[in-house]
Image (cartoon, rainbow, N blue to C red):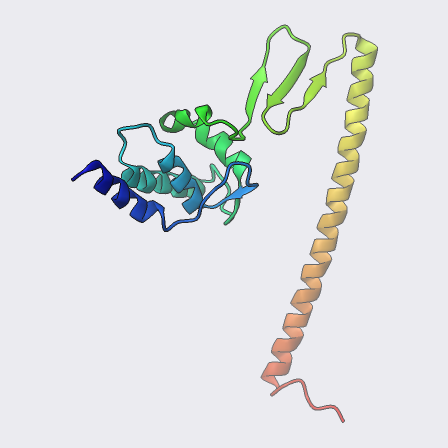
Length: 181
């Protein structure tokens, strides 16, 4: 089989799937597998790389390593993918978004490298540190209260839906909801 024949055979499988463009916010399994296969190092069969990548992604979703949504967050996906030894070559793709956590010993900041870079200064003095703890505790408490409020609203909605369902079931047993004049 000539090189061109091999390339067209691989394109047969890869050409039918969705395409991921660098910078897209979401990515599907098919598009991720196709992207990984297209960027595989020379000498690797693209068709086998596609099927292997698809299998690995599906397995990772089944065990909860990556989310099970149809359109995964592309940065979250590639952060997971570049961490795998078999796909470390993805780090060399220019423009590909992924995060790397960096913790430097002896430095007074922590940051995340990628699209969402955040630097957190750590105060030197005890008073500043205790003030930061108090502020964070207040924010945490506000978030917890809001979460409890949202949970209560959800519970009320579910209770109302259950009552409507029970009423509909009773009406169904009695031959319908009745005719009003």
